[in-house]
Image 1 (tube, rainbow, N blue to C red):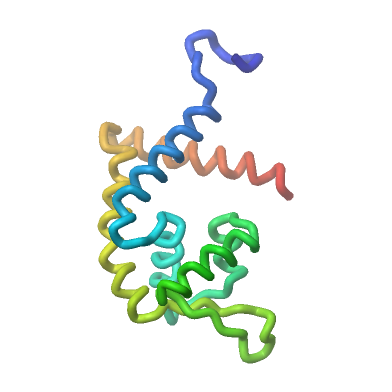
Image 2 (image 1 turned 120 degrees about the horizontal axis):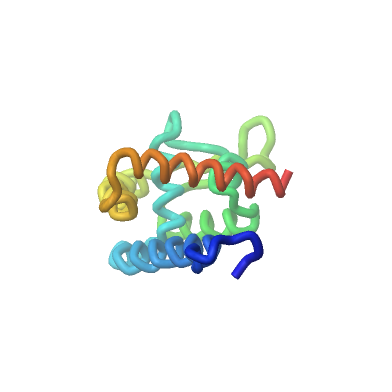
Length: 151
């Protein structure tokens, strides 16, 4: 048990957060496998579909999801192979990659949007409105606290 923790609060918050994230990923991956897509790819599809013009720069994806460049590159390469996205060099600087949603990616994004929304609702399903609001507020506060370590 961590120092300065109440005896009633026996479980480490870090472990609980890790278990929640892991369980969400397993559940999502299991349900998404019939589409041959991972939860990370679905999130990127959703991000692109909600972006003006259905495209974003690779750097935007890295920053939005706090993922390393090499990981984003691997995810996008797999998405390109599946013809869900297309990466092209920017007209002004070929080193900068624009990631465009293909027609196939757009259709799949619409299909999977409801699934992701339902998965997110499962997390808060037994919470009251006030608890959902507090949970969201505390998650944002925790993320902000941790992000300060990387600045």
